[in-house]
Length: 496
Image (cartoon, rainbow, N blue to C red):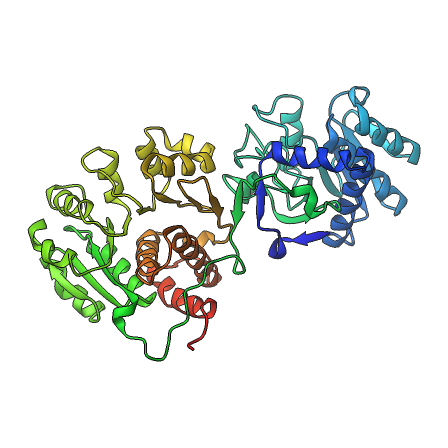
């Protein structure tokens, strides 16, 4: 069945898993060429829906099954009265199996196939499939460059050529598609790494695979949506603040007071029963002015935290903390507290430096640079395989990890991986991580499991960003806080 991006399945798979699913379908009695025909029909229907007035198609075909799909789409377009041409990148005589059958059918239908040609109409990228692992080589690199330079509408078969199906990394160069139609199982690489810049509108068709086809094949990641997120329990009429946790936020060294204030306001507005803030004494007046509901402790040394740590239920540490002596001493005190904790920002930089150890069962929220320091690798290496980096961090620190960025990832030490594909470019601004840290802390304080809290927080954060991002540039981190509150209430059960 076809699915648009708003109704995609939750399960994401790696390329090898999808190939295994394809093999299962064939072993269960569906010939490979019939699957190719189903894929071609799905691709053709999506093309017509996307560009109903086009009537001209250029298929750029390679040598694998992607090329076979492309040749069959060319035959369908010609039958429908479209002007059709195929640019065969390489020698079509090298095609094998079902792809060779598809090539023969296109020729029999009267499709024109040339070694080079003018790109016109809609371009169908049928160059490279999910098996690509190394850098794109010639003549494919030149074909991809020509497609991207054409200025014409582009649709990709299964995955934009040059995009890694497992990591979303661009392998040298990749097609910038306006539409991608993918088959059997959703590929993880369509949602992470650089995918958002290349996939365009995404349509999925399972090619009539049944639930039995997917049995015993574990998912690589779960795509977050409103239907699969954990819910906060409904609040009884007799509820009081003591039932919903007490969050203590620690941070805000000289010059960085705003970060911890954003986190504090976020925790307060996300439902924590009580919120306390430990920050530099100089920031107390600003904190009381901005969020008078927060209990503010002007803190000059870690000793002043000792009495408070016994009274709270969750810690959020790091926003604006700095890496000087003040921040190090406060972080050391927090690390020895047997409490659920969220570590962000400079808490993670101090962790990476080896000056402190992370308590068990924490949530850490690194951006790619912080993740790189924690793993001892480069930021480029983190971005080259974001799922692997998130899982490695989670196992190394026995923590739930939120790897922030486009399509944030949430990893659990047991190997679970979730992905949030929502968000908006307007969210590329300072302070949004501080808001997220406070939100995670508030959900933990209300009794949520760490992984569930991280998943719900990331989803709320991203979708609030989408709501506010529609107004364009100039989004401020504080704009998200009322939007998160509203969205959280819409997602939560009503009062009993």
